[in-house]
Each structure stands twice: as C-alpha cells, then as structure tokens.
Image (tube, rainbow over all chains, first blue to last red; front, side):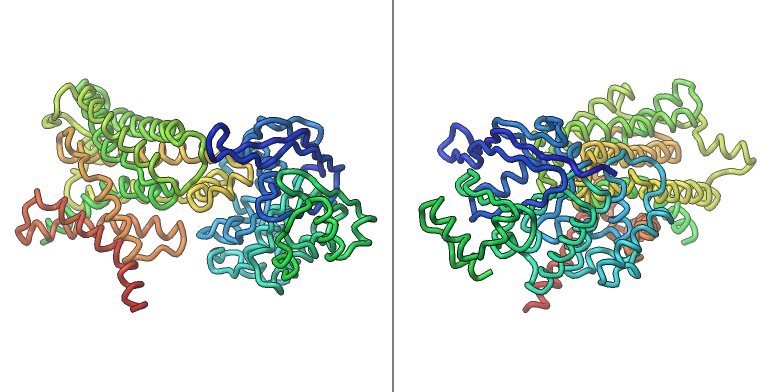
Length: 269
Length: 300
C-alpha cells in the first residue's frame, strides 16, 4: 500500500514514426504538475494527445524527450510493469481490466498482490476473501456472493466496476482513468462515475481522468485541463471550473484552439 | 482386448505429462509452443545416454526433465528477443517462430547427446525395473498403469497447487489478459518464460519415461508431439469439461487416455501405424472447427 503521490511532467514530447512520412507529434512538450491527492480531468477531441499522455505516464512507451516524475522520483526509464506497482489504471474497454476466464476472487487477489513480488503462497486466502467480499459489497451489484464465478459471465458495467475496484483496492500512488465510462450505457456510466468519485474521495487518490465528455469533466474532479494538438490549451482550478457550463467551455475552446471543433459529438454526450 | 486396454491406459498415462505441458502452453499461456516436438526426444535422449553411461535411472530421468526445463526457458528467452519489445499478446508470429527455431535446433542437440539416431536400452535397467525390484513387483501391464497413474496424480496436484499460488495466478493471467496483469505490476516476460520451462519439463518427462518403457530412445520420436498433445487437450475438454483449472487438469489426463484408446482401436481396425499422424491431424482439425461450423450453421 502506498500513499498518494505527486505527479510532475516536464517537457514531455512524443513523436510517433519519427523520420517517416507518417511522422506524428502527439505530445509537443507537456508541463503539468499534480499535488498529491488532486483529481484532474483531461478533455480534448480525438487526436488531441490525451490518451498518449496517459500512456506516457503509465509507461506503455518511452517519451521521445522530457521526463515523468512520480512522488518526486524520475520514472521516465522504468518499464511499465515496475511503474504499475504504484499506478492503478482503468481502460475504456470493460474487458481490458479483468482476466475473463479467471474467477472474481482470483482477479481481485491479483489486484491485492500489486506492489509486491508474487510468491508461492496461495493466491486466494481467507483474509483476502474477506477484504474482497467487503469491497464488492460496496458496489451494490451482489458480486460478493459470486466470488467463484468466472468474470466472463459478468455484464460490461459489472466488469468495469470490478476493474475500478481492482485499480484502486491496493491504494495506488496514482490512478489513471482512460475514458473508463465511454463504452458503457448512460445509466451504468453514471453509476461507475459516482463510484469513481466516492473511491477517489475516500482514499484521497491522485487521479488523472481522460474523457471527451465535457459535462463529466466539469462535474467531477478538482481541476480541468484541456488538450489540443498535443498541447495543454486550458488549465482551470476548482473555483474557475465551478463557474463554467459546457457552453462556456466550448467557447473557451474556440477562443484558444481557434478552429472548428467536433462540437456536436460533445454536446450529444 | 484386455491387453489393448491396459496398453492404451499405459500409453495414455505416460503421454499425459506431455499433454499437460501442451495444455499449459496452449491454453494457460496462449502460446502455441512447437518446442515440444524437440523437448520430448530431448528428455528421452538425455535419459538414455545417461543410463547407458551407467548412471542411475532416477538421476537420468531427473536430468531429462531438467533438460526439458532448460529448452522451455530458452524458447521463452528467444521469444523475448524476437518480439522486439512489443507487448501485443495476440501477435503469434514470434511465439511460433521461437518454437520452430528451438524444435529445429534441438534435433541437432538430440543427435549430439545420443551420438547416433537411436539408443537401445535393452538389457539395462530403467526406472520401472528399479522400482519393480524395490517393491518386488514387475511393472508391466496394469502394474505399470497403476505406477504411472500415481505419478500422474502427483503431478496433477502439484500443478493445481502451483497454478493457484500468487505466481501461478499471475501466470494464468498472462495468457488470459496480458495487458491487465502488466498493469497490475507483473513482469509477464518472466511468468511466460517460467511457464514455458515447466511445460517443456513435463514434455521431457514423457520422453524420458517412454524411452525407458519401450526400451529405446529415437531422435524421431517427437515428430507430431504438438498435434498429439492438442488432440489430447481438446478431447479432454470436450469429453470431460473445463469448468475450472483443477477440473480441466483431470480432463486433460482423461483426454490423453482416450486419444491412445482411439489409436489402439484404429490400429486394431487395420489402419497402418504410418497413417496415424494424418488421422490425428484430421481429428484436431475437426475438433477445432466444430464451434466455427456450428456458429455458421446456426446463423444460417
């Protein structure tokens, strides 16, 4: 178990396919600092670089230049699985966060083992089962009574709730949410989002949430960052964003980005 | 009939370690590992060479298993080199290539270890003769079946325990959802290499025992191992079910026995031994395509 960590990005750049005709500069030198326990929403259209940013923080690939500091420590060159010991992550695809043919209790046992080396002790112990049942009961989905069921039998919403729990249960220093409600139907998405807010608040997790839903970004989190074409174009604190509506946000975006924008899609959500 | 039955059970149980190995690679790790065609004769070669050189059969068997372990670890390491940093678990190219390369390389290694293409073990005691002397029994027929069954049960329970340890769960998750288990802080490169090592150790155990039971090691005895292993895995799953890991380990052992029964019956019906590999391949094709065909038929 670790404590919420600070996150600092310094001049983070990422170029895909450098030196070829397909060269794309996905991140153009991002500077961003999160104090411990801050919940930041990142919005932006497709291709703005918001998911690339999350991947760079998680260590899915190495940045072309710049550095990632987690808890004051430079982790830029550390492989993904090492960083993962202190970073929890929930993906957009509900299938991505769980092992489908393993049972609910085996999945949760894996998440409880995070941050330390796995050994030859039994994975699912009575003590762990008690923790799981307690945590699952809070989801209000009745999963605590189905510990031995295979995850593949669960609905998308149930799987995403489990992914969230698994990302947060070992209290990671940093929680990354990658459009984690985008693939769910609206009602389930709202449930998962409320659950997210409750878990983040209760544990005071440092959190980066990527979304292209402006309403979500305004309603949740202590800070709002807007990205466009690989840059941060807007950075609002809790006070500033509390005064805004989705319409204000779109106008602000037009002012900074200065070009046509996929407004319709965002308004629809 | 009695003799056919006992011999099919005997072969099925001797080969069940190999089938368990193929199950671990194919099903648990989602890694179609062709190394097994080379690691089965490797186990046989090491064991036969050591026994002929005057070492104890127990030591020779252990050494054979150890050699299989090393072969699997090497395949895993080779895969790390070939996949060139990508962690896309659905990319089977490097996995297949790593296995093919090891299988080919092992052919030479096996010939070098044996010094010739066939080592007869007639007139020297293998592990079954030694065990027989210990219990004053002769391990042929049903006695041999019982002895190998005990070993199979033991291996089954150790595997079952291992796959439910913390490391074992990580290994299972590596084949089930690699992205997720990496995001949980597990080094999936390590779990995969270890899994391949264990699987090929099991395959080599079959090679070692079969050589001692049939009285010779032959460099060609591994041809078609992967397909025979797959046939055993699929038949076990289809006939006995796959409701949990603990259960499916039993199913796979059962599948191995049923497969050898089928072979015994085919031979009895007059099918030439040389035609068996084609038959096995056809069997695997049919078993694997049934779900696809059924889906198409249902959809119309």
